[in-house]
Amino acid sequence: MNFYSQLETILLTDAIERKESLLTEAMEYCNTEEVTPEAGFAPRSFETPSYARRCRIVAPRDLPRRRKFTTTEGLALQVHAIAHIEYSAVDLAVDAVYRFPEMPREYKRDWLEVAQEEIRHFGMLERILEALGHRYGDFPVHRGLFDAAKHTEGDVLDRMAVIPRHYEATGLDVNPRIVEKLTPLSRKPEVAALLEALEVIYEEEIDHVRKGDRWFRYVCRERGLDPERTFMEILARYRLAGTRAALNVEARREAGFACSELLRLGAETCEE
Picture 1 (cartoon, rainbow, N blue to C red):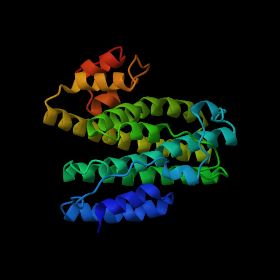
Picture 2 (picture 1 turned 120 degrees about the vertical axis):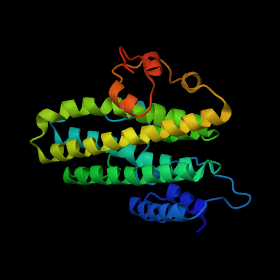
Picture 3 (picture 1 turned 180 degrees about the horizontal axis):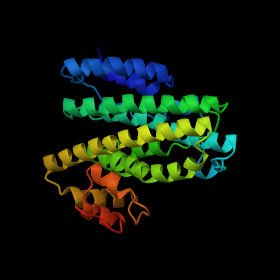
Picture 4 (picture 1 turned 60 degrees about the horizontal axis):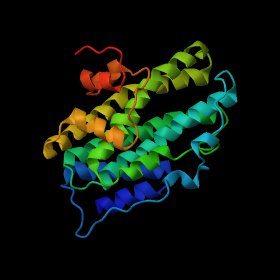
């Protein structure tokens, strides 16, 4: 197998079933072989995300306004938005392997595993969306996560800080708030299915953030950097710093964040 060519194919295709089958092959190969790129390999810098053929991409301000969960259309909009995050996360995880071949094999296995889990998350949400009479691509999307990955494609340290430790950790903050709003409507079959999917996603996303934390700290050790100071510097450089309301301290702690940095990020309290 040309491992990196296979990863490139995964990143280019918009067929989730093809992504899944190619990922299974890549993971099997990575588990049994020492993965090294061919001489002269240089990762491509992609200009458009793979979902561009399936979705109409708009600026965030032009996205349709979220309606109440009590309407079928409003619920479908919410499910579509989460499904888009999960689809994007598949490519982000694969790109983390494709773009940084110098990282250890265990790093590669970690992010291929994350990609497989993100595909499963997408599948759960896609089935709910179809039960609501819609498909992925029926609503406009933005390319914010793709752009964040593109901006950090030059340095694995920045990538681990910005994608898992910032954006995915923000998902841990938001998930319980969505669950709280949906719970009163849980007698509806689609809402019950969505709540079940969100519970699975929440538990597995903690592990994804933990993997990001692990490899962020690994690179910091390799470079002799202080992790907490470096993380805050990277957030500032990408204009992601600032007080963030309602941090999910418990989940972030489980994922590897230190209390000292959570307090700097805006947590009111945190116990070691």
